[in-house]
Length: 387
Image (cartoon, rainbow, N blue to C red):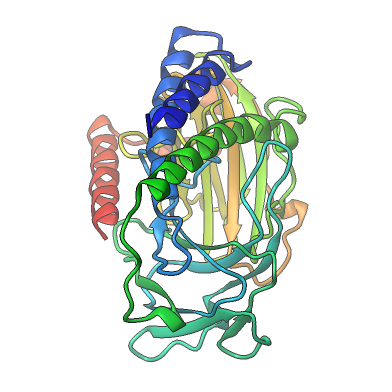
């Protein structure tokens, strides 16, 4: 059967999910199988998008194809490159907070993170008054508007980051191989489809193994219920710092995260499950940006991570996850962050919040106001997905 290698990979992937070391409950396993479904979908899409002669941008991860602690505020796109060909990227800048480009030399693997060969944001582009821009990637020498692509380059990754989900709009983006514009790819063959199914199966197994191993490198060796000082994000992103950690809380506990409002254009926080993916950010407030969060009069954000509803604007919902990952991101930085820019962590009883939060009364919201917050998230994500 032409699809047999992919079917075998799915069976092996199910075994990987079932044997994941963090599984404690039936719900953990159920979420693992849901994660598997998204991974199957994503790997088929990526295998069919492996087109270096007639490339196009494909969404790398989304609400139903999550991986790698995906940022709820980011649209991720990628296209594949030949290092000996020249590519033209054109687009129109939207109103989002950050648009960044990164050339990688390979895919993530269970033992390695791909090297970032070049990374920059749209401040290095010549953007016209109407927002349009173009940039070329190829083997020629670097120059304004031209990015040199080295011999081991394989993928161009683009990230577009929202802060105010309700008002910011994504731009447009297109990639073409310059010497193939106007041509058409050859017709499909059985051999090509066989290859693609095989590639999709290999991608699936590598993806699952990698992102189960990834937290061990950067998160789980840290003391529980702590967060690191801000540090340059692994993987070579041009202007991103992050603070990471992992939590374990019972239903009567709350984590208070106090962090100054940054001068960075983008500042965001999210929770992730033990499957190393974002929690449901569509129907629950499991993440907040600086534009979405309530800022206290002293210039600090105070976020409350808990299972029980504390009736506060900056409640971060655990949604039944007693363990998981914590991450702050700052992007489009113009300076390096210091420990003073990072979060302070405090574990308290939910019943103590009124005494431990200095602006508790001002931060309270009614159930009706909370429903309005969730409704706004649902609308914004739906519109962003159509954008």
